[in-house]
Length: 497
Image (cartoon, rainbow, N blue to C red; front, side, top):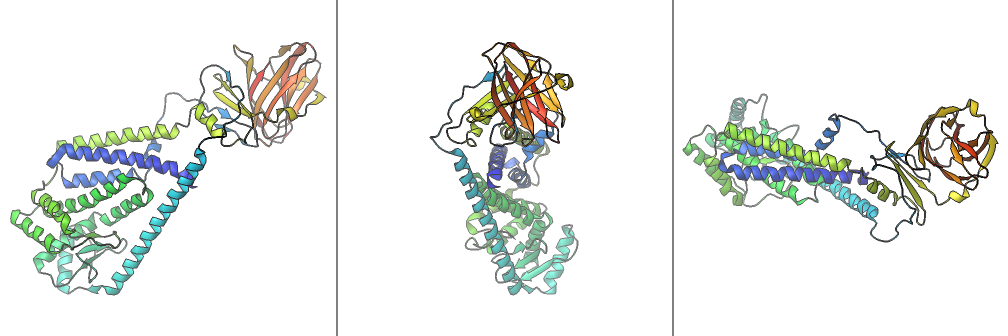
């Protein structure tokens, strides 16, 4: 499972990283003309590229033509798989021993995938444990606030467009006012003894987080960090999200305030700023940041624009979408680019035993690549019987400029099929038949029959045949397939005569 998931995780990581870099470039070019809210929504959108395989959507876009998938098969009981089309013409690769030295990339990939999955699962479990532990401490240490604060919370919730009751608790665990809880959101206050003005600012801030469902977005970013722990870009992504999460919330809260009220809001941020960064779980949103982050946050709040200029925001949004679509298109091409014959043949080298020999055949007419294990070809037993050609189903044998002819037959169960074209042979020559049979477990006889009905054949072993039939007398010979199984079979390959 890890080996299958890891390449997808790498593609998602690269796609998301490119989207993040593009967002940062757009933010840098726009300068102070880009609102914090635009940055916040932009980085949330980019984070989805790390978890959603958007590049897969390109597979559903129709193309003006379609190509039938070619077949690849080889000995050892392996079912046919599919590969992309091959170059023009027919090419038979000279049998070569497979390489036995160098880096085993298959093993490297497998170990890297296992390490990635082990670390990702460990990070998820660790964060879940910390969250549950922190929640239990909150429930034990939290106390209900007085009715005055509760009434202010109801009024602020109504102004923010939030229906229902707002849960408030006073807890010594809260270094600063914060919003916690996914299914039962709760605002934690360090103390219930707050002046009304301060309480309104604080509650307006936390209720904005509540309305925007920022806790769920923080959970999304935590999952991104766990799944893509190996990517340094992800940590920059989380840092910017945490910053823009708060600055965009400040921007919304102070959008209707004058300069003096904004200064009062900034003073409140300083008063409630914790001296150091809290080391507990990060699945909360706090009113105030650590003191070393406050200077930038207050400066942005005091000078923030109420909104990005409409034209600028639209242009940048279009640029971000186009850039992300281009990135996903590239990722889709990489994901589907297991389509070269060289890649396919190199992949087979991990699945063929040492010192075995393989042959590969490629044909433009069918777009088919056939790879057959020939190391045990001399051990195939040849049988002889008689066959009435008049009762055989005649099927095409496609010829080209070379001596290689192509077979692509569907033979019904219990039937026998013979080629419509004969091979004219002299004594001492050979007819080579190299085919793949699917299903591989089918009972199939593959051979040649002369004009007198003498049928020489071999049994299909493990779904493939690669056999040379030696010719003892001048005459014409037809390739023939007898399906002795209880199911239809597909026979694909080549005849060299």
